[in-house]
Length: 408
Image 1 (tube, rainbow, N blue to C red):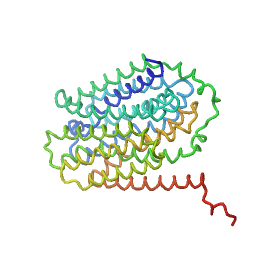
Image 2: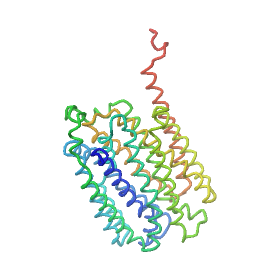
Image 3: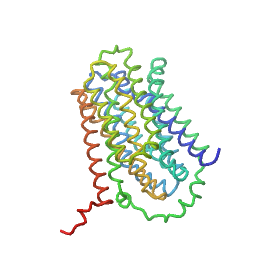
Image 4: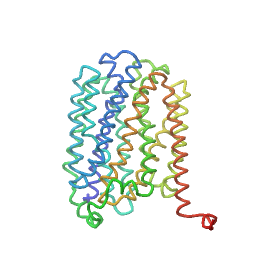
Protein backbone atom coordinates (compact mmCIF):
# COMPACT_ATOMS: atom_id res chain seq x y z
CA UNK A 1 0.00 0.00 0.00
CA UNK A 2 1.35 3.46 -0.93
CA UNK A 3 2.04 5.96 1.85
CA UNK A 4 -0.90 8.25 0.88
CA UNK A 5 -3.18 5.23 0.80
CA UNK A 6 -1.85 4.03 4.14
CA UNK A 7 -2.39 7.47 5.68
CA UNK A 8 -5.96 7.60 4.43
CA UNK A 9 -6.56 4.06 5.68
CA UNK A 10 -5.19 4.97 9.12
CA UNK A 11 -7.44 8.00 9.64
CA UNK A 12 -10.44 6.22 8.13
CA UNK A 13 -10.02 3.14 10.33
CA UNK A 14 -9.37 5.24 13.44
CA UNK A 15 -12.50 7.30 12.73
CA UNK A 16 -14.58 4.17 12.23
CA UNK A 17 -13.37 2.52 15.43
CA UNK A 18 -13.55 5.70 17.50
CA UNK A 19 -17.06 6.64 16.42
CA UNK A 20 -18.22 3.06 16.87
CA UNK A 21 -16.77 3.06 20.40
CA UNK A 22 -18.68 6.24 21.21
CA UNK A 23 -22.01 4.85 20.03
CA UNK A 24 -21.55 1.61 21.91
CA UNK A 25 -22.71 3.49 25.00
CA UNK A 26 -23.80 7.09 24.43
CA UNK A 27 -27.16 6.36 22.74
CA UNK A 28 -28.10 4.53 25.93
CA UNK A 29 -27.07 7.29 28.31
CA UNK A 30 -30.73 7.94 29.30
CA UNK A 31 -30.97 4.31 30.42
CA UNK A 32 -27.69 4.65 32.33
CA UNK A 33 -29.09 7.62 34.23
CA UNK A 34 -32.07 5.46 35.20
CA UNK A 35 -29.63 2.94 36.66
CA UNK A 36 -27.91 5.75 38.59
CA UNK A 37 -31.18 6.59 40.33
CA UNK A 38 -32.57 9.46 38.25
CA UNK A 39 -36.32 9.05 38.53
CA UNK A 40 -38.58 10.99 36.19
CA UNK A 41 -38.52 11.10 32.40
CA UNK A 42 -38.00 14.87 32.50
CA UNK A 43 -34.96 14.58 34.77
CA UNK A 44 -33.46 11.86 32.60
CA UNK A 45 -33.94 13.98 29.49
CA UNK A 46 -32.36 16.98 31.23
CA UNK A 47 -29.26 15.11 32.49
CA UNK A 48 -28.86 13.37 29.13
CA UNK A 49 -29.03 16.65 27.26
CA UNK A 50 -26.56 18.38 29.56
CA UNK A 51 -24.09 15.49 29.50
CA UNK A 52 -24.24 15.03 25.75
CA UNK A 53 -23.94 18.78 25.19
CA UNK A 54 -21.13 19.81 27.53
CA UNK A 55 -18.33 18.00 25.69
CA UNK A 56 -18.96 19.53 22.26
CA UNK A 57 -19.60 22.91 23.87
CA UNK A 58 -16.09 23.00 25.35
CA UNK A 59 -14.54 21.38 22.28
CA UNK A 60 -16.15 24.01 20.07
CA UNK A 61 -14.30 26.75 21.93
CA UNK A 62 -10.95 24.97 21.75
CA UNK A 63 -11.09 23.35 18.31
CA UNK A 64 -9.70 26.30 16.27
CA UNK A 65 -6.75 26.58 18.66
CA UNK A 66 -6.05 22.83 18.51
CA UNK A 67 -6.23 23.25 14.72
CA UNK A 68 -3.69 26.07 14.81
CA UNK A 69 -1.36 23.92 16.93
CA UNK A 70 -1.85 21.08 14.45
CA UNK A 71 -0.85 23.42 11.58
CA UNK A 72 2.34 24.26 13.45
CA UNK A 73 3.33 20.98 15.13
CA UNK A 74 1.51 18.27 13.18
CA UNK A 75 -1.95 16.70 13.08
CA UNK A 76 -0.86 13.24 14.21
CA UNK A 77 0.12 14.11 17.78
CA UNK A 78 -3.10 16.07 18.24
CA UNK A 79 -5.26 13.15 17.11
CA UNK A 80 -3.36 10.79 19.41
CA UNK A 81 -3.86 13.20 22.32
CA UNK A 82 -7.60 13.39 21.68
CA UNK A 83 -8.14 9.65 21.25
CA UNK A 84 -6.15 8.89 24.39
CA UNK A 85 -8.44 11.16 26.41
CA UNK A 86 -11.42 9.05 25.33
CA UNK A 87 -9.69 5.91 26.62
CA UNK A 88 -9.42 7.43 30.10
CA UNK A 89 -12.87 9.05 30.23
CA UNK A 90 -14.80 6.04 28.92
CA UNK A 91 -13.09 3.75 31.43
CA UNK A 92 -13.79 6.17 34.29
CA UNK A 93 -17.48 6.45 33.36
CA UNK A 94 -17.90 2.74 34.13
CA UNK A 95 -17.29 3.49 37.82
CA UNK A 96 -19.53 6.51 38.45
CA UNK A 97 -22.24 6.45 41.12
CA UNK A 98 -24.09 9.74 40.56
CA UNK A 99 -25.56 11.53 37.55
CA UNK A 100 -23.33 14.56 38.10
CA UNK A 101 -20.25 12.30 37.89
CA UNK A 102 -21.13 11.55 34.25
CA UNK A 103 -21.62 15.24 33.55
CA UNK A 104 -18.27 16.13 35.15
CA UNK A 105 -16.38 13.50 33.16
CA UNK A 106 -17.98 14.66 29.93
CA UNK A 107 -16.92 18.22 30.79
CA UNK A 108 -13.30 17.13 31.28
CA UNK A 109 -13.45 15.26 28.00
CA UNK A 110 -14.43 18.46 26.24
CA UNK A 111 -11.03 19.94 27.06
CA UNK A 112 -9.23 17.24 25.06
CA UNK A 113 -11.68 16.02 22.40
CA UNK A 114 -11.84 17.08 18.75
CA UNK A 115 -10.17 14.28 16.82
CA UNK A 116 -13.01 14.18 14.27
CA UNK A 117 -12.09 17.48 12.63
CA UNK A 118 -8.39 16.65 12.61
CA UNK A 119 -8.98 13.34 10.83
CA UNK A 120 -10.89 15.25 8.14
CA UNK A 121 -7.93 17.61 7.85
CA UNK A 122 -5.58 14.64 7.54
CA UNK A 123 -7.83 13.16 4.85
CA UNK A 124 -7.68 16.41 2.87
CA UNK A 125 -3.89 16.47 3.30
CA UNK A 126 -3.59 12.90 2.01
CA UNK A 127 -6.03 13.28 -0.90
CA UNK A 128 -4.71 12.84 -4.45
CA UNK A 129 -5.15 15.89 -6.65
CA UNK A 130 -8.78 16.45 -7.60
CA UNK A 131 -10.10 13.84 -5.15
CA UNK A 132 -10.61 15.88 -2.00
CA UNK A 133 -14.38 15.29 -1.93
CA UNK A 134 -13.85 11.53 -2.18
CA UNK A 135 -11.25 11.54 0.63
CA UNK A 136 -13.35 13.69 2.96
CA UNK A 137 -16.43 11.64 2.10
CA UNK A 138 -14.55 8.40 2.84
CA UNK A 139 -13.61 9.51 6.36
CA UNK A 140 -17.10 10.86 6.98
CA UNK A 141 -18.50 7.55 5.73
CA UNK A 142 -16.39 5.80 8.36
CA UNK A 143 -17.62 8.28 10.95
CA UNK A 144 -21.16 7.20 10.03
CA UNK A 145 -20.62 3.48 9.57
CA UNK A 146 -19.12 3.22 13.05
CA UNK A 147 -22.30 4.59 14.62
CA UNK A 148 -24.35 2.37 12.30
CA UNK A 149 -22.88 -0.71 13.97
CA UNK A 150 -22.20 0.74 17.41
CA UNK A 151 -25.76 1.04 18.78
CA UNK A 152 -26.77 -2.48 17.68
CA UNK A 153 -23.60 -3.97 19.12
CA UNK A 154 -23.88 -1.72 22.17
CA UNK A 155 -27.51 -2.64 22.80
CA UNK A 156 -26.62 -6.34 22.67
CA UNK A 157 -23.53 -5.76 24.81
CA UNK A 158 -25.52 -3.84 27.42
CA UNK A 159 -28.06 -6.67 27.62
CA UNK A 160 -25.31 -9.27 28.09
CA UNK A 161 -22.71 -7.58 30.33
CA UNK A 162 -24.49 -4.42 31.47
CA UNK A 163 -24.02 -0.75 30.63
CA UNK A 164 -21.12 -0.28 33.07
CA UNK A 165 -18.94 -2.91 31.43
CA UNK A 166 -19.92 -1.58 28.01
CA UNK A 167 -18.01 1.62 28.86
CA UNK A 168 -14.87 -0.48 29.43
CA UNK A 169 -15.30 -2.04 25.99
CA UNK A 170 -15.65 1.44 24.49
CA UNK A 171 -12.33 2.44 26.11
CA UNK A 172 -10.66 -0.56 24.46
CA UNK A 173 -11.98 0.58 21.07
CA UNK A 174 -10.33 3.98 21.51
CA UNK A 175 -7.05 2.36 22.54
CA UNK A 176 -7.05 0.44 19.25
CA UNK A 177 -7.71 3.68 17.33
CA UNK A 178 -4.73 5.37 19.01
CA UNK A 179 -2.49 2.45 18.05
CA UNK A 180 -3.61 2.57 14.40
CA UNK A 181 -2.76 6.26 14.02
CA UNK A 182 0.55 5.86 15.86
CA UNK A 183 1.72 2.92 13.75
CA UNK A 184 0.33 3.62 10.28
CA UNK A 185 0.10 7.39 9.73
CA UNK A 186 3.27 8.92 8.25
CA UNK A 187 3.16 12.71 8.57
CA UNK A 188 6.48 13.20 6.77
CA UNK A 189 4.75 12.72 3.42
CA UNK A 190 2.36 15.61 4.07
CA UNK A 191 5.16 18.01 4.95
CA UNK A 192 7.11 16.96 1.84
CA UNK A 193 4.31 17.70 -0.64
CA UNK A 194 4.85 20.76 -2.88
CA UNK A 195 1.46 22.27 -2.04
CA UNK A 196 2.30 22.16 1.65
CA UNK A 197 5.74 23.70 1.32
CA UNK A 198 4.87 26.20 -1.38
CA UNK A 199 2.37 28.20 0.69
CA UNK A 200 3.83 30.83 3.03
CA UNK A 201 3.44 29.87 6.65
CA UNK A 202 1.80 32.24 9.09
CA UNK A 203 0.01 34.17 6.34
CA UNK A 204 -3.49 33.01 7.28
CA UNK A 205 -5.39 34.30 10.32
CA UNK A 206 -8.81 33.41 11.72
CA UNK A 207 -10.17 36.56 10.09
CA UNK A 208 -8.71 35.53 6.72
CA UNK A 209 -10.42 32.14 6.90
CA UNK A 210 -13.81 33.69 7.66
CA UNK A 211 -13.39 35.93 4.61
CA UNK A 212 -13.01 33.02 2.18
CA UNK A 213 -15.90 32.79 -0.29
CA UNK A 214 -18.79 30.61 0.93
CA UNK A 215 -16.98 29.76 4.19
CA UNK A 216 -19.51 31.42 6.50
CA UNK A 217 -22.46 30.04 4.53
CA UNK A 218 -21.06 26.51 4.69
CA UNK A 219 -20.27 26.93 8.38
CA UNK A 220 -23.90 27.89 9.00
CA UNK A 221 -25.06 24.87 6.99
CA UNK A 222 -22.82 22.55 9.03
CA UNK A 223 -24.19 24.03 12.26
CA UNK A 224 -27.80 23.57 11.15
CA UNK A 225 -27.38 20.02 9.91
CA UNK A 226 -25.52 19.00 13.06
CA UNK A 227 -28.12 20.67 15.28
CA UNK A 228 -30.88 18.58 13.73
CA UNK A 229 -28.88 15.36 13.47
CA UNK A 230 -27.93 15.27 17.15
CA UNK A 231 -31.28 16.33 18.59
CA UNK A 232 -32.41 12.70 18.59
CA UNK A 233 -29.90 11.46 21.18
CA UNK A 234 -31.57 12.59 24.43
CA UNK A 235 -35.14 11.76 23.40
CA UNK A 236 -35.31 8.89 20.91
CA UNK A 237 -35.20 6.02 23.46
CA UNK A 238 -37.89 7.83 25.46
CA UNK A 239 -39.98 8.42 22.31
CA UNK A 240 -39.73 4.75 21.34
CA UNK A 241 -41.12 3.86 24.76
CA UNK A 242 -43.98 6.34 24.41
CA UNK A 243 -44.96 4.72 21.09
CA UNK A 244 -45.77 1.49 22.92
CA UNK A 245 -42.55 -0.52 22.65
CA UNK A 246 -42.11 -2.78 25.73
CA UNK A 247 -39.39 -1.58 28.14
CA UNK A 248 -37.32 -4.72 27.54
CA UNK A 249 -37.09 -3.88 23.82
CA UNK A 250 -36.55 -0.10 23.98
CA UNK A 251 -32.73 -0.34 23.89
CA UNK A 252 -32.76 -2.74 20.93
CA UNK A 253 -35.30 -0.76 18.87
CA UNK A 254 -33.57 2.54 19.64
CA UNK A 255 -30.25 1.03 18.66
CA UNK A 256 -31.67 -0.18 15.35
CA UNK A 257 -33.05 3.28 14.54
CA UNK A 258 -29.74 4.96 15.40
CA UNK A 259 -27.97 2.40 13.21
CA UNK A 260 -30.33 2.90 10.26
CA UNK A 261 -29.81 6.67 10.43
CA UNK A 262 -26.05 6.25 10.64
CA UNK A 263 -25.91 3.72 7.81
CA UNK A 264 -28.03 5.92 5.55
CA UNK A 265 -25.85 8.88 6.48
CA UNK A 266 -22.77 6.88 5.45
CA UNK A 267 -24.33 6.32 2.02
CA UNK A 268 -24.98 10.05 1.77
CA UNK A 269 -21.33 10.81 2.55
CA UNK A 270 -20.12 8.17 0.09
CA UNK A 271 -22.22 9.28 -2.89
CA UNK A 272 -21.89 13.01 -2.25
CA UNK A 273 -18.86 13.34 -4.56
CA UNK A 274 -20.88 11.90 -7.45
CA UNK A 275 -23.78 14.24 -6.70
CA UNK A 276 -21.43 17.23 -6.60
CA UNK A 277 -20.39 16.47 -10.18
CA UNK A 278 -24.02 17.05 -11.21
CA UNK A 279 -24.95 20.06 -9.11
CA UNK A 280 -23.25 22.77 -7.01
CA UNK A 281 -22.91 22.27 -3.28
CA UNK A 282 -25.52 24.91 -2.25
CA UNK A 283 -28.22 23.27 -4.38
CA UNK A 284 -27.38 19.87 -2.95
CA UNK A 285 -27.64 21.26 0.59
CA UNK A 286 -31.08 22.73 -0.20
CA UNK A 287 -32.31 19.39 -1.55
CA UNK A 288 -30.89 17.60 1.48
CA UNK A 289 -32.66 20.02 3.83
CA UNK A 290 -36.01 19.40 2.15
CA UNK A 291 -35.63 15.62 2.31
CA UNK A 292 -34.43 15.58 5.92
CA UNK A 293 -37.18 18.01 6.93
CA UNK A 294 -39.78 15.68 5.45
CA UNK A 295 -38.38 12.85 7.59
CA UNK A 296 -38.56 15.02 10.71
CA UNK A 297 -42.22 15.79 9.97
CA UNK A 298 -42.97 12.06 9.83
CA UNK A 299 -41.35 11.68 13.25
CA UNK A 300 -43.51 14.52 14.57
CA UNK A 301 -46.76 12.84 13.52
CA UNK A 302 -45.80 9.19 14.13
CA UNK A 303 -48.21 6.99 16.06
CA UNK A 304 -46.30 3.72 15.70
CA UNK A 305 -42.63 2.82 15.64
CA UNK A 306 -43.02 1.57 12.04
CA UNK A 307 -43.33 5.20 10.92
CA UNK A 308 -39.87 5.83 12.36
CA UNK A 309 -38.44 2.89 10.41
CA UNK A 310 -39.86 4.38 7.21
CA UNK A 311 -38.61 7.96 7.73
CA UNK A 312 -35.16 7.33 9.21
CA UNK A 313 -33.33 6.16 6.02
CA UNK A 314 -34.34 9.29 4.07
CA UNK A 315 -33.42 11.52 7.00
CA UNK A 316 -29.97 9.96 7.41
CA UNK A 317 -29.19 9.94 3.68
CA UNK A 318 -30.01 13.65 3.35
CA UNK A 319 -28.02 14.70 6.42
CA UNK A 320 -24.95 12.75 5.24
CA UNK A 321 -24.95 14.18 1.71
CA UNK A 322 -25.58 17.73 2.91
CA UNK A 323 -22.81 17.58 5.51
CA UNK A 324 -20.13 16.32 3.08
CA UNK A 325 -21.17 18.91 0.49
CA UNK A 326 -20.74 21.70 3.03
CA UNK A 327 -17.33 20.48 4.24
CA UNK A 328 -16.04 19.97 0.69
CA UNK A 329 -17.19 23.39 -0.53
CA UNK A 330 -15.49 25.06 2.44
CA UNK A 331 -12.30 22.96 2.19
CA UNK A 332 -11.75 23.85 -1.45
CA UNK A 333 -11.15 27.51 -0.59
CA UNK A 334 -8.77 26.86 2.35
CA UNK A 335 -5.00 26.84 1.58
CA UNK A 336 -3.12 23.70 2.72
CA UNK A 337 -1.15 25.55 5.42
CA UNK A 338 -4.41 26.77 7.01
CA UNK A 339 -6.44 23.57 6.90
CA UNK A 340 -5.99 22.92 10.60
CA UNK A 341 -7.41 26.34 11.45
CA UNK A 342 -10.08 26.11 8.74
CA UNK A 343 -11.32 22.68 9.73
CA UNK A 344 -11.09 23.74 13.36
CA UNK A 345 -13.49 26.62 12.66
CA UNK A 346 -15.79 24.34 10.67
CA UNK A 347 -15.73 21.92 13.58
CA UNK A 348 -16.56 24.75 15.96
CA UNK A 349 -19.71 25.37 13.91
CA UNK A 350 -20.46 21.65 14.00
CA UNK A 351 -19.78 21.31 17.71
CA UNK A 352 -21.82 24.36 18.63
CA UNK A 353 -24.72 22.61 16.90
CA UNK A 354 -23.77 19.38 18.65
CA UNK A 355 -23.63 21.15 22.02
CA UNK A 356 -26.77 23.25 21.71
CA UNK A 357 -28.90 20.53 20.14
CA UNK A 358 -29.06 17.95 22.96
CA UNK A 359 -29.50 20.67 25.58
CA UNK A 360 -32.43 22.19 23.67
CA UNK A 361 -33.82 18.73 22.92
CA UNK A 362 -33.46 17.68 26.55
CA UNK A 363 -35.32 20.64 27.99
CA UNK A 364 -37.89 20.72 25.18
CA UNK A 365 -38.36 16.96 25.48
CA UNK A 366 -39.18 17.34 29.17
CA UNK A 367 -42.26 19.28 27.98
CA UNK A 368 -43.11 17.41 24.74
CA UNK A 369 -40.92 14.98 22.82
CA UNK A 370 -42.84 15.52 19.58
CA UNK A 371 -41.99 19.22 19.74
CA UNK A 372 -38.29 18.30 19.32
CA UNK A 373 -38.94 16.83 15.89
CA UNK A 374 -41.22 19.74 14.95
CA UNK A 375 -38.34 22.11 15.77
CA UNK A 376 -36.04 19.98 13.57
CA UNK A 377 -38.40 20.30 10.61
CA UNK A 378 -38.67 24.07 11.05
CA UNK A 379 -34.88 24.41 11.39
CA UNK A 380 -34.27 22.47 8.17
CA UNK A 381 -36.79 24.60 6.29
CA UNK A 382 -35.01 27.76 7.48
CA UNK A 383 -31.61 26.27 6.55
CA UNK A 384 -32.68 25.36 3.03
CA UNK A 385 -34.21 28.78 2.46
CA UNK A 386 -31.16 30.60 3.82
CA UNK A 387 -28.66 28.62 1.71
CA UNK A 388 -30.74 29.11 -1.44
CA UNK A 389 -30.85 32.89 -0.88
CA UNK A 390 -27.10 33.05 -0.17
CA UNK A 391 -26.30 30.96 -3.26
CA UNK A 392 -28.50 33.19 -5.42
CA UNK A 393 -26.68 36.31 -4.20
CA UNK A 394 -23.30 34.73 -4.95
CA UNK A 395 -24.40 33.79 -8.48
CA UNK A 396 -25.63 37.35 -9.09
CA UNK A 397 -22.25 38.75 -8.01
CA UNK A 398 -20.37 36.36 -10.30
CA UNK A 399 -22.78 36.67 -13.25
CA UNK A 400 -24.56 40.06 -13.00
CA UNK A 401 -27.71 40.49 -15.02
CA UNK A 402 -27.65 42.99 -17.91
CA UNK A 403 -29.92 45.35 -15.98
CA UNK A 404 -27.52 45.42 -13.03
CA UNK A 405 -24.85 46.85 -15.33
CA UNK A 406 -26.95 49.82 -16.49
CA UNK A 407 -26.04 53.20 -14.98
CA UNK A 408 -28.60 54.69 -12.65
